[in-house]
Length: 523
Ligand SMILES: [Ca+2]
Ligand SMILES: [Ca+2]
Ligand SMILES: [Ca+2]
Ligand SMILES: [Ca+2]
Ligand SMILES: [Zn+2]
Image (cartoon, rainbow, N blue to C red; front, side, top):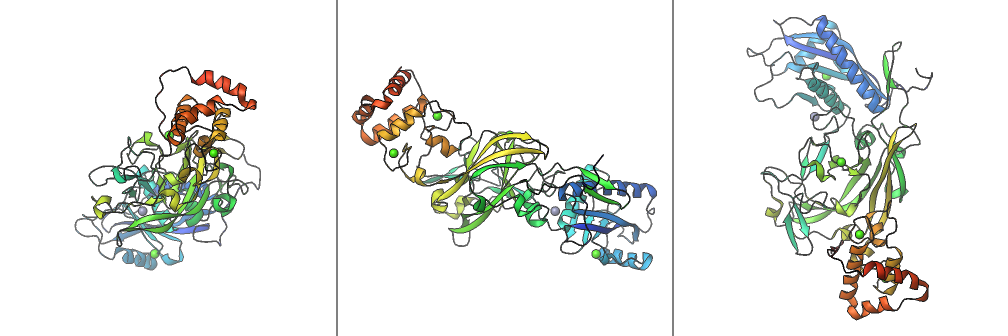
């Protein structure tokens, strides 16, 4: 068992999302139906235990809601079993007059309407009336689905919106595009063409699309870090620091969804054995400049975006968010909204200019981006002259929990707008770049970002500086200065690199077939 004093429990007098709270649980039924039974009460209490443990683990022991009143509320229903128009007011008044309870004195009024018929056009299984303390659940709370609905609606009660996902679906309602700067045209996106564009134009911003989050799509997973940080204040800014302030570095980010709950029976209160560690990180966040296509003006206009990185236990990489919405960075999962392959995996890296710097979310129902005659987007590095690159180095665990290590580097437009293969970044492609390239041949490129690999001579980003990259260097050099000049830099080695070049000549000039390296950063 636990060492005394290690656990964290909520205190009474905090914000909406922090504290020990009491709720009234209304069991709504027809006046002619059987009254609330001991068996129903046991089911409600069992569901309450699940909710309380879920919220204790999510909140780090800061939030707990218990149903101090579970009350039988008979109402005169319509003949077909549906509820009459003003049923909430009737239910609250019934509880006032029959039990002497003032519902508005409680943090939550939970209306269990599973004993009534849904309205014919009722589109909800649960519904929260924000900012009141009321929420209703139509689903049977003894089912898995009903439990998810219960915990989802309570999330709304304490200020959390839906957990969306940006999904590059291409179907009868959505047609995503990417812009090809070579052809000067928008091209239709598919997993085969344009998959390097993490957030294509016309992307579906699926309001409930996050498959990991109780506020998203059919899941009982934790709230995400963006929610825990901004809506709930269960994490502090120090635990998900602002990258614009802390800058480059290697960051160890702990899973935010594996705290262990504990119950204090004397006080009837749920908490956690150890809360979020004050000196560890559970995410990274920052705001950035971006542009979005504006339907009114038909132009791109500047905007700011919030980016959040997080890690969930057992996953194979980091999750990235734009605002409330999870980005899909793993094409292997396909476009199904339930697929869990969204992460940037260990060994991969991404430049932030490759996701959503130019943005248009389709309004749905066949809203085709191209029908708005959009102008060409800005080049990403015109929007963001400096950007972050994220490289996922590896996973592990220690006494604090499981974690992912992420390399964050800051890169700029010199490599994008400058001279191809200019490895020393002096604006010229010359012999100095050749010597640098040669010295880095077959060097170990693990732990570098994409730009870092490029600057180490891995032009085609396959993880090695090798023969394909040599062919790219050669083609690029010949295009710039001619074949004779290229022969010259090979023929006239400086004395110090004579040995090296002799080796390289042997290495590179067996004229085996190798496919030409695709220019990685075609502008
Ligand atoms: Ca109320
Ligand atoms: Ca994966
Ligand atoms: Ca150079
Ligand atoms: Ca390569
Ligand atoms: Zn909802």
